[in-house]
Image (cartoon, protein in one colour):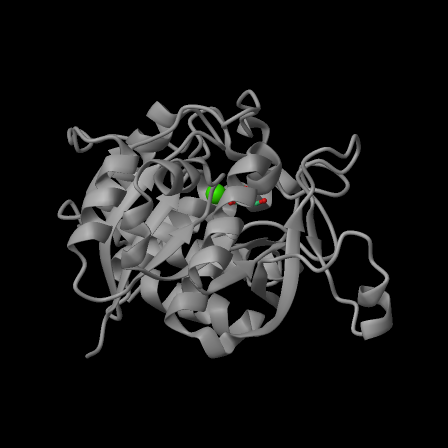
Amino acid sequence: MQKTPVIMDVDTGVDDACALLLAALDPTVDLRAVTCVGGNTDVDQVTRNTLAVLEIAGREDVVVARGAQRPLIERAVHARHVHGDDGMGDLGWVHTQRDPDPRHAVELLRDVLGAATEPITLVPTAPMTNIALLARTYPEALRGLGRIVFMGGAAQRGNATASAEFNVFHDPEATAIVLDVAAERGIPVTMYGLDVFYDPTVTRAQAKELIASGGDTARLAGELIEFQCERFGSEQATIGDAGAVCAVIDPDGIGTTALPVRVELTGTWSRGRTIVDVRDWSGDLAHDPHGRADAMVDVALEVDARRYADLWLSTVDP
Ligand code: RIB
Ligand code: CA
């Protein structure tokens, strides 16, 4: 079976954990490494959470490294109100004896990408601070990248603010740098943003079935969904970041359009917004003082939500 080499960059949180379970267990994913960054919670807790989730999935073989504590410019704004104090719903799953790799995340990215004999798909589901630092510190390592499939941004909405999505809002400069170097080097980029992020959902009833099925990965997966249902008072919850991994495993499950994308860095109310240019009349562009953005991104605007939710369910509870 042809496997896709993947590196994930995470701020393990509840839905990053859903994504890690999928990447660790799907037979078509060759999970080469996971790097950690501050975001949903502090980077040390993110690292502990990531090690714990991989251990529960039986994947202690996957190398994990600790990365940036805070964004390039901004102060860290954690999302414990969403993911709980430990970032994993305070469900009591975070026990691990394993230490992260002694290298910084940027050094691990440099080494794994540098040693790659085939293009690697990078899946950031977090603020892209580590990736921006890699691009500025070891730009030659980017040659190992085949595609970036990132969870972040949105064409039509925000969540951290009215106009910005959390991962981009947390480190707008990092996202701008990553889109810029990808455009410069011709690295294809897929944006799995809020336009599709909330659609693949799992019900509370399905979560209960996962919990009852007995296996640790299924039980953790079910409890993560149940935690979100409780937190948001809902009968279903999104698989969140796991959708970006679904987009690697089953790219036909999303509908993408190649569109120019910029990141707003200076707007008072719009800082961190991904400005996705959907205009299709050349006259508009001809008179636009800003000109077209350099970054052409495959923006996911549709998703087969049931297909992705079923892919996740069937993988976490084999
Ligand atoms: O906006 C959603 C993103 O922010 C997800 O990656 C979630 O884990 C949080 O980091
Ligand atoms: Ca995340």
